[in-house]
Length: 311
Image 1 (cartoon, rainbow, N blue to C red):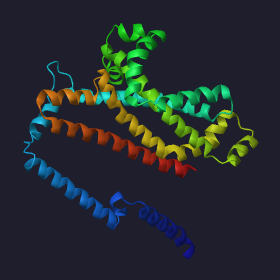
Image 2 (cartoon, helix red, strand yellow):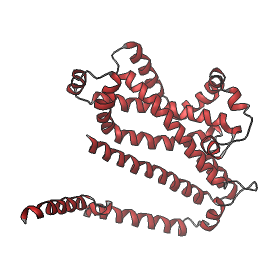
Image 3 (cartoon, rainbow, N blue to C red):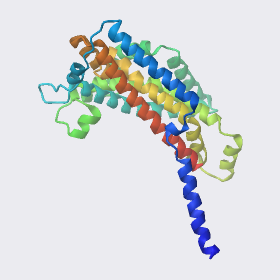
Image 4 (cartoon, helix red, strand yellow):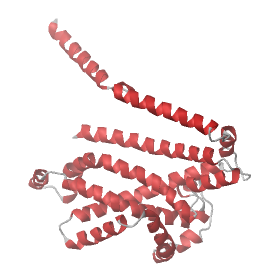
């Protein structure tokens, strides 16, 4: 009888342990966290009260909400959401470029061959020691006009003919803005790749020497060594800093509004200036950026948990 009940008791104990380990975020708050949240809430309430009374500003939230949902005469998405989609599109392709090129730079930076290490080091130091805004202006006004014809993309980006389907429209946007999109993607991607390269390099250097020797002793090829032994450990080590850099990339997309790329900051500037609702529009833009970055942080949190569970 006891032997029959043993699996049941073990299963019940395992289920209870799993339920105990699954805690919501608010259950992990302590007294100090509650006090800090209360102070922040009181400060925000006081700030809102003083802005309404002391500054004598008339809030027009209903007009602002109505404005961001007003569709254009052509029947397309509202102008604000066009900027939001452009920000998502710019962030997506910049992230792909930054992760791909940054990984290659990080591996080259970790290499013992000066042929790979020196050019990677020069690029990383050059990009990291130039202010992002200056880099954007240099790239857009001096390099972009020469780089696009050099890559043979002039006819594709400037002289595209034909209709686009829904997927192409979402991923690449209107054909007449492809050149701006490509300039913004290359600019933000190269800017972020220098920082991601250092994250990759630090992750590779954090792997103990014994792990490399163990992979070599198993006779694994270079690809299999990184895929099965080094890669999972590096991913676990670099997930937190990589999450921070990815979130910074999303926020850095606002810089390219200065070169007339119509993403959310550019759209917010035009809407705030034309409507006069400066505070309302910019607060809405800030909230949307916060939601995007917070969603990314939660996504990387889940990736970190899964990568740790796989080790």
